[in-house]
Image (cartoon, rainbow, N blue to C red; front, side):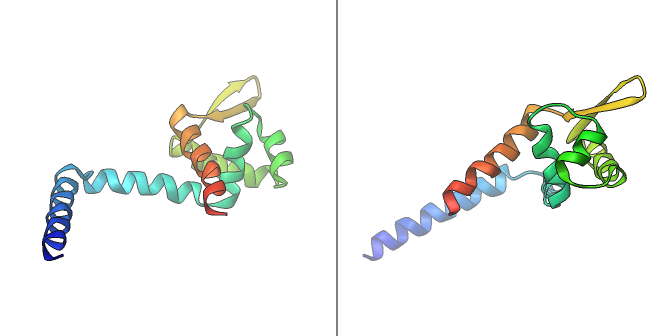
Length: 118
């Protein structure tokens, strides 16, 4: 029994050493945490979820999200400044879309996780 405890203790010690050697830098940890903080806002997440269905302008995003256009524009500015969405100008309109596949994967994994926690 004591041998099993010592084996587990050694296993945990090795896991801790690997984690210490391979952990992200403080700056990178803060960057990743920032992405999650931005996505933690329900209005911004709603916008991102809408954009997963396809590119849209502010008018249509406001309609889908049941928010004002100025409110959506404010949230889009935050999302854009942090590399979560991107905008492309078409005449006087801006069309917004998800910035890259990683953001899509993060959000889709979060949605898929709902099935695990219910």
